[in-house]
Image 1 (cartoon, one colour):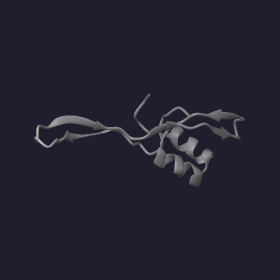
Image 2 (tube, rainbow, N blue to C red):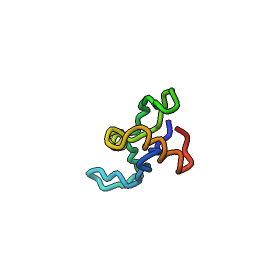
Image 3 (tube, rainbow, N blue to C red):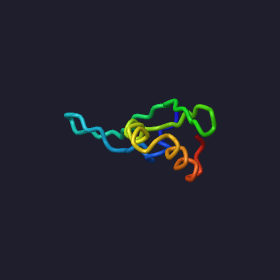
Image 4 (cartoon, rainbow, N blue to C red):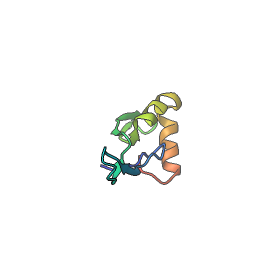
Length: 78
């Protein structure tokens, strides 16, 4: 599964994991990426964008049509 959000551009962050002994090891913080199915009425089909949970809440605010338009203008596939 891709770890990049198509709408909010959320991507993994990297930092160190520091236990009690302070022996540092590299770790990765992945965003919460989900595949959400939305109905696209203008095309008469469903789209399955790869979105972070924060971006899914934004889809409810701006609408599916605007979301798909933004993803496609950035060169993404939705």
